[in-house]
Image (cartoon, rainbow over all chains, first blue to last red; front, side):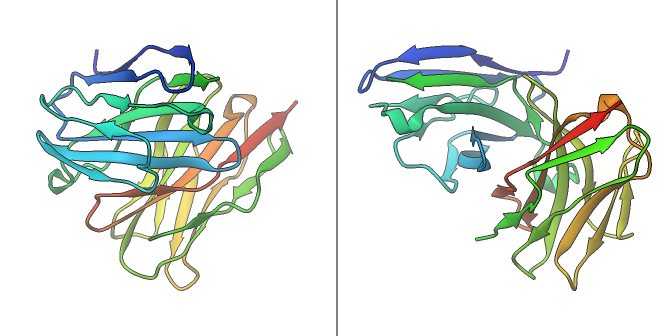
Length: 115
Length: 113
């Protein structure tokens, strides 16, 4: 089954404790992206990756890091989480745009609470 | 950078009534336009998209959206809604380099019996 998986689905942590949210896709997609969803603000793009070893900032990259060492994985790293990073996080993937497909496939989401 | 405006945060409507969810974007440069739907406790799913060609695009479940370049709008419509259409709907824009996506704040459609 074609899918994007995220782990963990729920996470409660404390300020300053480094964490990683994993994202994996099995569709051989080149493009991957992280978003955060906050009430009244919709989804905001954190980072995206056009392919292995190619990453760039979205609209709200502060406080986050990413890496793309393998095509299927795109982990999101919070080196020193703060309460304002409490949010619902989504990973998404799609084929490279030149293919003519622009549909992003979204993971189920990770609800993060930072106390 | 683009901004995407969905003016209606919530739209209550009775079953079988028509509905329009509004979306406006800021830039006049060439863009790709999307509507995504999010059912409770799930990720987003693509509903329909405008890339080029006909300005009226349709989904398989009866929704349609019309790209209006002069008004920079991409409103979503359905002539007769069902209870199962209850969800949150997000409008999204990507410029032709496709690197970044910009989402609106979402519209919660609540279909009442």
